[in-house]
Length: 122
Image 1 (cartoon, rainbow, N blue to C red):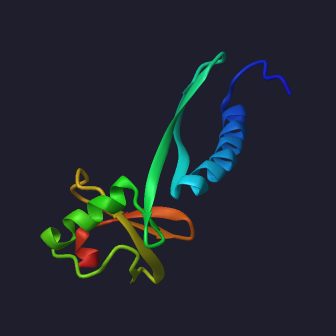
Image 2 (image 1 turned 60 degrees about the vertical axis):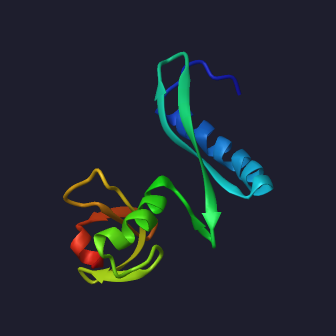
C-alpha cells in the first residue's frame, strides 16, 4: 500500500506496526520500547521512541524512576505498583511528576493514567 499523504489515521496505523516490530527488539535486549509523540505534515512525520528498562516486572519510565527517587523525601507510605482506592475506584501507582505542583502522583486504572495530589499516597 503506497501512502499518498500523511494524516492522523496513517500515523496511528504506522505507529501500531512500529510498536509491534519494536516488541521483538525490546525482548531481545530486555527493555520496553514504545513510540511517543509524533509531529507531521502531509509529506513527512517524526515520532519519538522511548526505551525503558524493567525492574522486577515494572517498566521504569522516567515517572516511575522519579517516584522511587522522591518516595522517602515526600513521605509516601506506598511503593511503586501499590494499589489504593479513591472515589470508589482502585488505582495502581505508576509514577511521580515532580514539576506538577497540584497533582504530581500518577496512577493507572484500566489502562488510563490519572493524576492525584501527593496527599493520596501519604
